[in-house]
Image: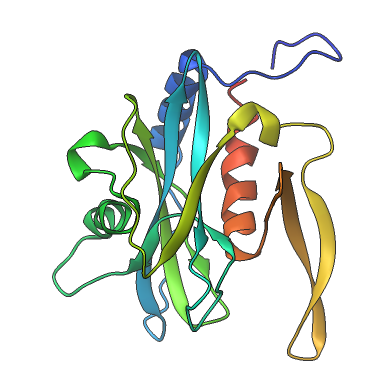
Length: 199
């Protein structure tokens, strides 16, 4: 990192190319856990002027699980479907990002959720502005957060949250009126740990 002390980190096109190289040189940790159902998600990087943002959604309030929480596109992998195809399909179905507009640049380490899924996160770049088309049954709204804002010195906040009579550390990212945490916070932390190596 070649920044002066106190300067604001900037994630630029050059950073994206460094991230692409880093992900290609660093094989993702793939877990062998057949007892869990496979899922795939997309970390959508959206160009914003000379910088890049991450697209998030707020889940619909009427969902049975995790209603109203902040998420990224993703879901269960269908039969005979690759993980990569599942990630971009879910992004198209949930928020209207056509699969041909997504350039996959790498894969992050697998994660296991409390709800019994083995999740493969993929990073994808959307270089040109698109109009989002939301699945009303799944998504209440979408919003973009500049990667630079997520690299602020006070991000993330770490809190201990209860689960099954124990307390576990969780990452909380704040932007505007939104609070990003849970599985999305875990994936975001893993992604940003790599981003720090590129800015």
